[in-house]
Amino acid sequence: MRFAISPSALDRAAVVASVASDAAGAIVTFEGTVRRQSRGREVVRLEYEAYAPMALAVFASIAADAQSRWPQVSLAIHHRVGVCGIGEASIIIVAVSPHRAEAFDACRLAIERLKTDAPIWKREIYTDGAEWIGQGS
Amino acid sequence: MRVRVLLFAALREKAGREFEDLELGSGSTLGDAVGLLQARHPSLGSLGSSVRLARNLEMVDVTTLLSDGDEVALIPPVSGG
Image 1 (cartoon, rainbow over the protein chains, first blue to last red):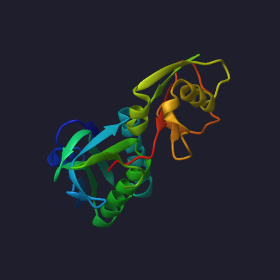
Image 2: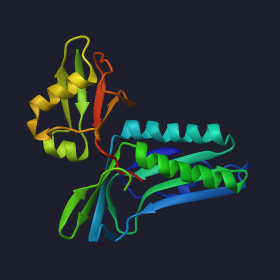
Image 3: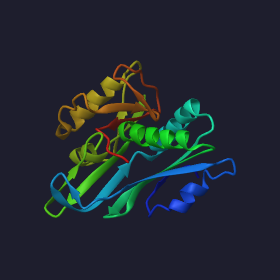
Image 4: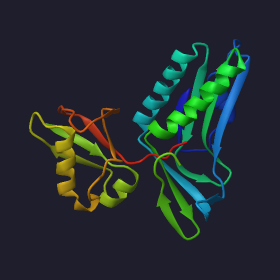
């Protein structure tokens, strides 16, 4: 499955496998991971919530946009929902292409567009409180 | 007509609900649905321009007309990725 919203730990190999092809000369992977410090506070965990049907539609739309710019690129996007611990991946994006330039460009486009367009929300849980995070964080 | 309005994240917490079903007259818009929702849930407060609106999985504006059975969502500022 190229596009997925998953309540359990993301599987890098599965995301790659969803777009792997013998036409690929380049596989570019982006992983967003949970870091310990945010906004000067210590993070205990993140919690993600998604409007799943629309998020999946946005993932497909991002991939279609990338394909219109770079016809030989295939994109996969998997996003976690629920609790995400320090060091765990909240998102994995894989771009495959015969050549590396388009794969890097498409992978970059995908994460930047997802951050503004996908109906997905992150709540940061700190040692001393919690906060829903707004756009583009 | 009947529409379902979905709430997420901070808005879901403020309203204490994941969704609200609304009965609206024909010719109603997204704006009408939001107004009725706010009347029912004053805890939502004024939403401001940063809350976007979706109808049947697509972003729309407040003037968009609704149809019976539509699924509307209030999209507060997003933070995926």
